[in-house]
Image 1: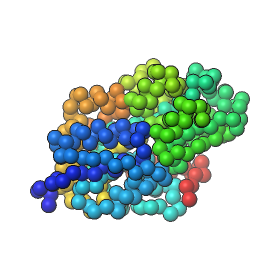
Image 2: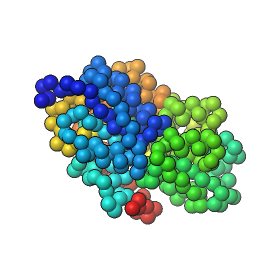
Image 3: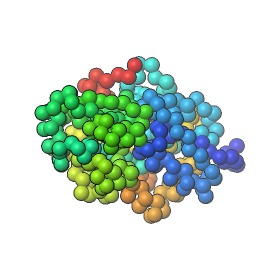
Length: 304
């Protein structure tokens, strides 16, 4: 079978609605695969903090024609936050390749009278219970980062508001329905910042983003514990033939050697991962779960 793979279009499941980091990475990847693997169509299956889309892939035929754009978020969500998980992220999905790292921004509506992260923390403490923040869903990396921010900043009374994805949360943050949002940083989010629709106060990256060096890291802004890196990459249903897995991984690595594609990702707020393979991605995801486990326990978070 693998000798002729692929003979028909590949389905890439993005486990969030359009408008967030996953969609911003998944659709350009699908375009880059056309000359390498043939047509790839993207299907957005949002809900339950990425679980619905990931579970749909975990249950699909392991033939290389249904892939998941997953990574840190779905793995941590299902491994640590569910009493009744929809699937086992380790047993039911085979890692293929990481594509890029993404970071979380602390963004506020322009009406919030804070120009720095320190000023926002002071404002939140002065207005307990009056501020709301939007995130991509209970258990998402965005949600965990928002709760970690509250813990580190000493602002437990900022109220979390879950959405089906970051796109709808950003819409409400811009509209003022919530005062704060914790989006994955993408080109769209940076444009909202530069156009004044949102104000990015800090990013969770270990160093300033090449695409937005004017925005401080959360560590620089006074929260050294708020360093969050989320990997995004491709996974397949468990049991997908190894040679198909490697063919997809190699096509992705080939695309990532193009300077123009690398620059596109960097300008979009991502950090390309150039040397990934199935085993490296597997180890990275296991490390993510180990990293978040004590945080999840300290926050006492459970989805069900």
